[in-house]
Image (tube, rainbow, N blue to C red):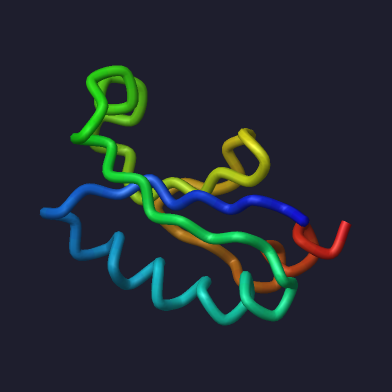
Length: 78
């Protein structure tokens, strides 16, 4: 099972939009999905800065800001 994390922050409107956009794709591929608030961890806040939302799959950055659902589906199917 793949693990999908979405790096977000509370003040990010795009983060909520991307979360809603990718949730059905993640669910279809039976991957685990979690939102990670980068502001809750100083290291994550420093790493991601203003580059949220960021999709991370199995610990590897997959997409930043915009996500193509077809590319995400293909990655999760591997």
